[in-house]
Length: 116
Image (cartoon, rainbow, N blue to C red; front, side):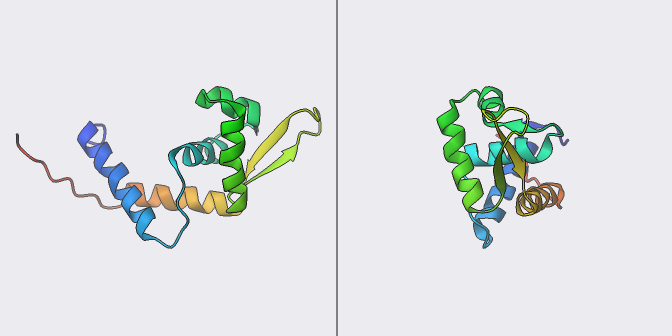
């Protein structure tokens, strides 16, 4: 059941609606994708690596990170081993947002089946 497209789309819709109704700031899809990759990946993420992983250019990642830093969900620091590289880390606020999304997604979901 959980792998059925209708069910998964319902979960995404319900989660998005809950986020919009909350007092938390809205993220666009790219910002959310960057946050999820940064917070749910064990290895350190770089701007270059995020751009490659998401198949977008580095300026697009930079704009997403500008917003995430503004909201204190992620932080950029210079890589100590390679000063040309920028490492992106999840903050406590970012981890809390990802956890909140996860809780919302596994919450009680009623899927109403429509017959065609």
